[in-house]
Image (spheres, rainbow, N blue to C red):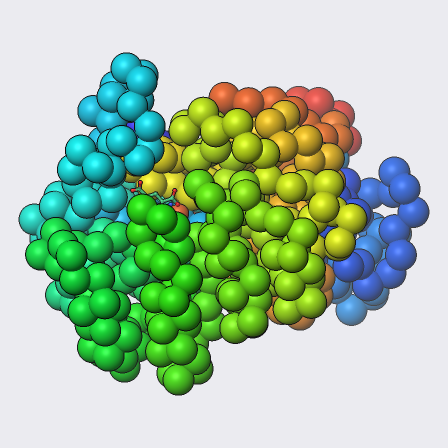
Length: 431
Ligand code: NIG
Ligand code: FE
């Protein structure tokens, strides 16, 4: 069972003091010398000030105090690529892959995305909500404060609507920022076999406009791949999104180099995701468009991929790199963003600061949330996490444990487990 705090949420307003700052993930109001403890002021659910504790402005001195016990403070985590809402699960494919089947073999045998489509179509909106709730809670318990949730297991208007409505309801029920992405072009639904062009027409002319009109679509995504949709079909979907003024992103170059990333960059894409087979032209196009590279080590690991994403090239070009769970029932049934940071370091050779920026600052950019999430700075909603660690590297170093952290989400203390863990280590804060 996922952890659910016994402590009810309460206002985080006041001065959070005696904290270590993850300097690369913050823009303090007053410069913070190394090893100096900081304070963070929250008023009306907003961060009002970040800086050295001994420079706290007098105007905040009388506010209530929250003991930080010397914990590390980071922005709330951002999971920028998930397929969190679906019916059923696909452990059988795990077994098939262990017996030697590839991702493409599984898809061709009637498994893969289409098997989740069958289960999702059968499920009611409430059943989908109940199934997704503990998955989302598990991510939130580790400090996620903003998350993207895609459709793409409905592949028909009413079922795509059902998924997106559940995504919105989850955000409201748990008090977390949810960005919805319409992924109607995820796979060809069985009733359109051999009629790919007709399905893309349906996506562009009916499904997307209807769902956008209902306020259910924050971004549009396509699975551009030889087992999914072509470059030409991808562009038709991008044009439909552009007509509606909705930003695009792309599942690109996962299994082969289709040139999807360069196309997405031409449409000013927020992000290109997976990108194991991305080439130099794609990197250059993403750089000039300001498109974020979203790395998905969970899918890479599950599929036992051997083609590494071009980290050195992305790094050299200065393309921002995000890291996400890609939570989905087929290729990445992962429910820990910190584990993905660990895997991005170990498998992809990201540095720790890159991995931590990947699950905060750059992930926020991949969702168009760079002005409100992923960075500790005054003027932003109070979303932050206090971690019981001596240094930031520990966030990516440990794996398989959920740290006993304190979480402030949307201005509320929604988990407060740090106290018990660190109070005994900090003699100046007894109780
Ligand atoms: O991001 N690549 C395509 N889509 C998902 C997999 C979805 C599935 O297999 O159900 C992904 O890995
Ligand atoms: Fe995905």
